[in-house]
Length: 91
Image (tube, rainbow, N blue to C red; front, side):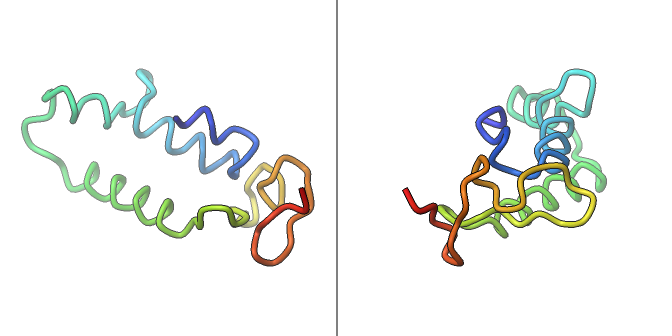
């Protein structure tokens, strides 16, 4: 699912979520948690999961995904199409 965000979300945020949640060379938190490989959740793991949940909660369906300074990616999060203030592209 994170691959679907490619080109639609700030690249830095997408990479961060990938590294924390599913990358085998990263924390792989989603897979470790869902497959019962974590016995005690650390405060750091909980903080990262909460951070990602808050990041996702800040996004609006159909609206442009906010891009902050330092993020790679399209300013309006719509693959290069212009979007009005509601985040809807003209097509």
